[in-house]
Amino acid sequence: MTDNAVSPAGPLVTGAEIARLAGVTRAAVSNWRRRYEDFPSPAGGSANSPLYALAEVQAWLAKQRKGQEVSLEVELWQTMRAAYGEQMLTGLADVAGLLAGEGAPGPPDDVAGRVRELSRTESPAEVVSGLAERFMDSARRSGSDQVTSERLVRAVCHFAPELPADGTVFDPACGIGSLLLSVAADEGTNCCGQEIDADSARFARLRAGLMGRSRVRVTAGDSLRADEWPDLKADLVVCDPPAGVTEWGREELLLDSRWELGTPSKAEGELAWLQHAYAHTAPGGHVLMVMPASVAYRKAGRRIRAELVRRGVVRQVIALPPGTATSHALPVHLWCLRRPLNTSADGTNRTVRMVDLTENDPDASLEPRPDQVADVPLIELLDDTVDLTPGRHMRALHRDYPGEYAALRAELAEVSGRLAALLPQLGPGDGPGSLDAATTSVAELARAGLVAYEGTEPVSTSDQLDTDYLQGFLRSSVNARRSTSASGTYRLDGKGSRVPRMGIDDQRRYGSAFRALSEYEETIRRVDELSRRLADIAREGLATGALTPEK
Image 1 (tube, one colour):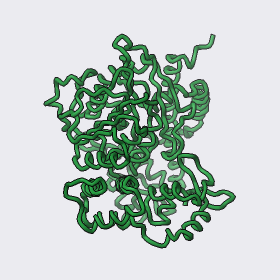
Image 2 (tube, one colour):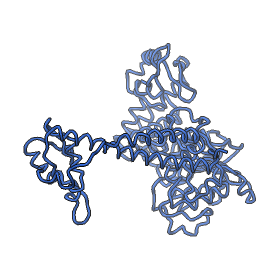
Image 3 (cartoon, one colour):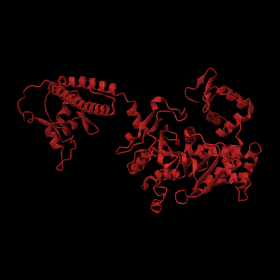
Image 4 (spheres, rainbow, N blue to C red):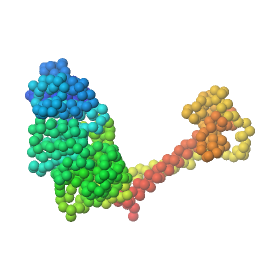
């Protein structure tokens, strides 16, 4: 049950939780909502994430007997798992081919029988959509990046621009078509896709046909090495490219005309995909590209990022909530580009909008709060790193420089004022070496049962031995020399080190002094840290105009 989801109607549940209650997919629950007028109405949540009263859902399921038997779709999926194993993409394509009436060899007889049985109650489009959603859900739960997650599809759709009538959308790494078909939801939109995996491309093409999407064309092949759409110029290019791939064909594509922003390095395959998408964008058209967060700051991609900024091509970078990409918290960004209407328009865009949603829930609203948005001037981005990480610029824009400076200055004054008082009162002793006459080793103390070890540090286990006294003498210059090797490496010789013999009262006097010195040293380190932070914020505040010298 959803955390904290309680209303006057009682506990609330999501569509996914209803699916688990009934043993079906979320697609099946969506179908029930559309088909059955008596399906419970939302009792909370939002339009994108409705919540339902658990009691009403349970009563409806009992009435329909849907919670008491395994659905036909689940039986089909289980049969496909048994027949295809890890080759479920082949199974999806075979089932779609059977439903589309393809002449190619279809699925095994037991799978085909289950498909025909399910087709008596659901349309072919509903069957393939349900199987596609189940496949995406299994990939999400396993943490796989094999398909674009539902959350990522939702994010791209949210930030996608409005398409012109009869517009064209292109996805050069379309997978099973989920992102392409969702962004271009209008049946009148022209959709083009390419996918290196033949089964995925086949399923995407057949699925579109079964959905009545006659303007969808998907081809199989390697988009970077063998572009099947060389002359295509789209109004919108969307892409969730393969991440971290170094063998993308750089050596054979060094002189390719697509690299108008710079030739990507071998390690920057994502920037090759970005430029491939940009090359297929019509004047005034847009690119929405899913990117690993590291592409925003990696040194190897600095020149290409600089060219994107200098030309005014990159319009927006959105840091999406953790968990958007897969079931784990992989951080991803959404880069939004726009090709100028003509070459003379270069540089007319003066800022890049940075949006930082990294503190948000991946299933919550994608509308940013005012403090999560910053319009950063291009000149501020064109430094030595050209870092396009939204969070970095958000902190600088919304940082309370005067408040931080005043607080740090007050804390430094308070901590510095305590320093002198922390020093112990020390008087003259009997002279250097006066404590060397009667000493004992830590090993002897251990054999007597007076010390034990916490890691490498010996501590007292007896009321006849003061721990601060023991550790204070262990850090003395004599024992430090004993613990330092000929090569200069220091490693505490906890057993060979020696401490003076003295009564417990004298031990406690020395221990108190050593303890005061340790606190003094810790405070010195705190003063050093505060001093550096204070200097940094003062310098940055003065340079950005957030602080000014008093008159």
